[in-house]
Length: 67
Image 1 (cartoon, rainbow, N blue to C red):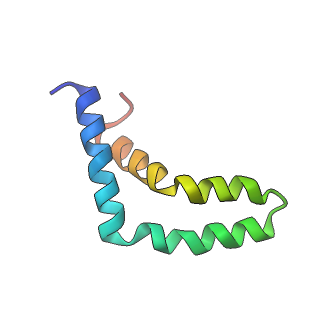
Image 2: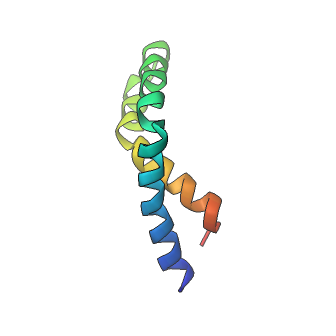
């Protein structure tokens, strides 16, 4: 299996892992609070919107490395 395919597969596993571990619901309140405290709420709203992809990418990089 090529590294690009492995990275994509592990990325999808990262989505499942994030859901099973409850990471997304546990991070959303933190992101909302940070958005309220910072002067740049729009940036934190984008993090909130993309948190699932960020976690899946982090999982993929942690398992496969940068490919």
